[in-house]
Length: 452
Image (cartoon, rainbow, N blue to C red):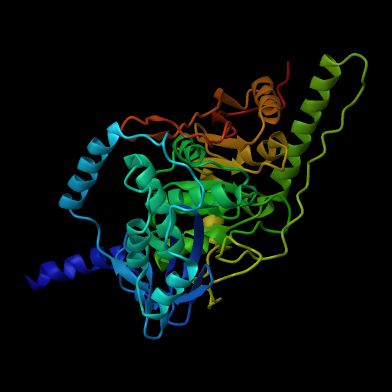
């Protein structure tokens, strides 16, 4: 029995929070999303109340908390989920409320007999948020006349104001992507969660893979690849130029030291020798010039300059709200993205990478592919994301002309979220129309010197 307990300890620890870990706090069912680091001194501001995050330490992910008024001030107390009896009572109330409607209800602000002074007096006496909500329902003259849907809507509105709830979520690739896409999509290059999963699938990210990554999404792509590798293989975050791209989002994943060691940085010049780079660039440049001269009769030459992206100087916090940070800043977590060793670079020069994924919306895809595609091994898959279609179409045409890849296709995912409720099933009214495009293919052996 003792051996079994020892084997289950790592699993239990993975399901519980610990001091210093990063968490995603979902306040009032998605109304506000906050990334925070759990420490004894960190606090969270909900409305006009500052609550300590210390009660969240040691709790399992998925726990629900509620703001209560304690003796020492506002605090977060854990809420036990509703039982089957409560669910049955709600279903019975919905069935009985199907025969009611709201046509006879007049909104004249006279239905509520409980005033603001009465609510303040209840708070001074130590009434909880649930007690205040029940008092508002009991003193409402029109609550019993409403339909079950209107009653739930009214109760939820009052709970968000007087009894806000906080859901403790685990920060992994999907939750982080959804949170940033909802609050700050430009930070991750407008990368939607279905697009991220499709990139990992088309890039063939599997165990013991060496994935070459161009991540201009703040580190979201690097963290997602490292999460899927699970401590095997390597994630090489490369950059076009000398200044590396920021990857602060990787710190939110709570990676162990073993996984952090598998996340390395290397520039294009480090991975390949300068002679090979100059020779390949000269061959591709001459090939592009010949293609332009043959296709365009009027114009003699077209510039093929790379689009440069200025590096971000500011380091983003773990909080999505940039104007005011309700959580105290703490010390940084494990270092990620150290420079790759010479032995690893030599291995990549000889064998190449097993796959490549590019998320660089502000760069020209062809300028990136013509330098990075020769670094892959033969028959290695690659996937390139861009917010718009035309840059990928141009890159696809260049790859077809110079026979650098096969199986080229441009994919556009479609994601629609539905609200499924009794007698109210329909697509959500607010949803993103386009999630971008992906150019995918397989690298082939290219001899640029043999031109037709």
